[in-house]
Image (cartoon, rainbow, N blue to C red; front, side):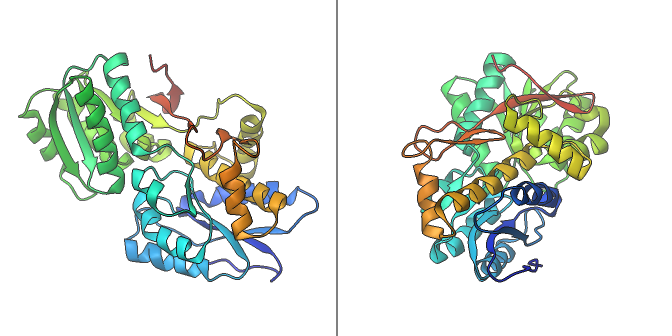
Length: 349
């Protein structure tokens, strides 16, 4: 449910993200409270289950849009929910900052919707290039979740592999209820891959790795950012998760004072290590707070501030790097590999 505001004059930022992301709100609230002067900024959140049906996401957006003094929103958690909610925010002229949604269609969701992450075309090209140049892929199988995230990433990977002359032996749709072992066995009838790419979230990715390696020892597996959930992936699949390559937008070892300060604060406040989605969401919340302090509690002024980053005004120095929304922006993409239950940065060339 939407949280209660302590005073009607407060400026409000809405947070519509997975319930697992609420520690990020704790951290952002503490950091915002340390700034003296300017408008009082409060973050409220509407609890989200990742992958909620589109109508639920729309209802959530409508609740947030109706909150008095709401200036901007961070969310929603996934590409499908974000795309479903975007028309609500665009009609109400509320800036919507999307931390980790990657669907290329978000670029066309409306003038009030801003993506922090790279889109699935660019991420797919990154994965395809890594598969060929770093892993020497000669035959690839692709498994994808049949939603906006999975199909978008599948298409980006496929286009890159096609351009490099690498055949895709099989392309298999999965969902949370799929019999993954049977699907994997069926895919092997079309040929034995040396690289498997998972455009799926952590549950399906873990089951794909578990089954594929039982049939094809030594096969290399790459997953998109949707699988970057280290704790449940490693806790559930143990050694079967080891050595999976996974795309991330940020790692705790990132250089720069903003990142180091965030890592220390996050661990102190939450008692756990920060993950990629935590850093992206933190950047979204703190960027909006900076916009409100800089240009005032106005939706249109905040939108102009976001558009001016990197041109009329300097790019925002965030935890995940420099942030702007111009045509030449380069959101971070990092290839990691799970080793001993941790995501380790690996070179891409």
